[in-house]
Image 1 (cartoon, helix red, strand yellow):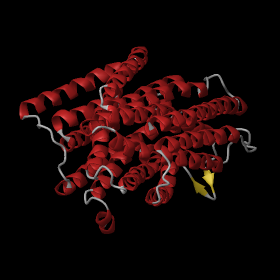
Image 2 (spheres, one colour):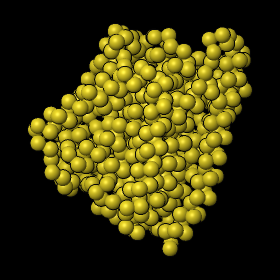
Image 3 (cartoon, rainbow, N blue to C red):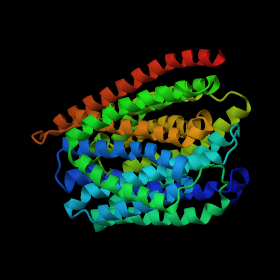
Image 4 (cartoon, rainbow, N blue to C red):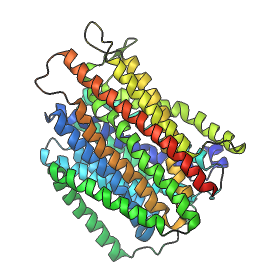
Amino acid sequence: MDSLSARHPKVLPFLFLTEMWERFGFYVAQGLLVLYMTQYYGFSDDMSYTISGIFAGLVYISPFIGGFLADKLLGFKTAIIWGGLFLVLGYALLSLSSVSALFYPALSTIIIGNGLLKPNISSLLGTQYAAEDPRRDSGFTIFYIGINIGAALSGASGYIKNAFGWHTAFALASAGMIIGLIVFFSGLKHIKNTQKIQPADGKLKFKLLFCCVLAVIGISFLMRVHVLANLLLPGAGIVLLIFLIVLTLQQDAKYRKRMIVLNTLILSSIVFWMLFLQLFNSANLYIDRLVDKNLFGLHLTTTVFYASESVFIILLGPVFAWSWQALGRNDKNPSPVTKFVLGIFFAGLGFLVLAASTMYPSSEGLISPLWIFLSYLLITIGELLLSPIGLSAVTMLAPSNLIGMMMGIWFVATGFGGIFAGWIAKLSSVPEATATVAEKLSIYQSAFFDYACLAFFVAIVLFFVQIGLKRMLKE
């Protein structure tokens, strides 16, 4: 940590660890969610995918509001603290959701907490670097490794669930967020205060807190009424797209071009995330039902597989961070759009491998876990080419007074990816009447192949869009 602090802002290790524990808790909850609904509550695949999609969508859409509040009223530090406290409460409620009435309020509280914390810790890190600092991409990639250490640790939740039950695993998520808050408080003295806002007074903060509680109640209702959510959320997306176009046109010539590039990255990321989030939806149930959990004498749980993607990021992240820094020194660093094209392409390769895996079941009708690890390795490469680069691009391309809000919009795009992930996951829904392994494999094969084709199509389109963007920037 000392050598890291010498090369990067001193607060980076503290933000690294805060985000690590926050992601640990979140991935415990998200990784178990579809399994919990299908196995504990007995929901159908379709219903579980719908709830999971709405949850993922709102989890990532809420940062748009959280980023706005931090930019205008609360500041990054206060928003992060509030978000952490809501997450502690949300995971605690989920651990008590054997009382079914607590299930939707638990998910809603997690959504609010994530909205306040997630965009603002990334934005806070961005403010600690100068605009043209060549260490920026490297710093965000290191930060992204912290995210994935937390996600990798969450893979143990399957063993904890098997030994102690669902609710102990969810309680562990709450404990992880408490540790994250303690670390964040410890690093406050190292934060350079570059955010110039007039902080809200006590009365206004109380009103905002009360509005957050009302939002928990409203979201709980929205998640129960699936049809209403599936109509309102896409409608909100259209409104947001119009807002983004107007916001871009209002900028001066320099920032207008930068915003067009940023908007292209944001829109294309939706496709990546709707595919990536299948790791918690269709791929999660595929592994649970049809993949052999024994590897070289070790017994694996379903959660180990999604956590392996984070292990790959931890292993490959330093290589990518070093590569971007080395290429940057020689003015050969690929553009963000080029990295996005490659990222979406690798996601497509990952799902092509999953589709191929269904063709090679064992005599017991189970798929070798090595297919899953290969697929997730390819998806990991795609994620490293897209996600940390997107975070860095927001702080680099957005006007300084809009960084928090644009970071929120970046996560909103992930949210719409989550909503659409719930929709396309239904291509893999296994009807209750489907009894044979061959029928199940055929359903998953078709769905995974469709996902791969979608990724390849978007990557090709984005490749040609990039040519036009380069010409615009030269002009």
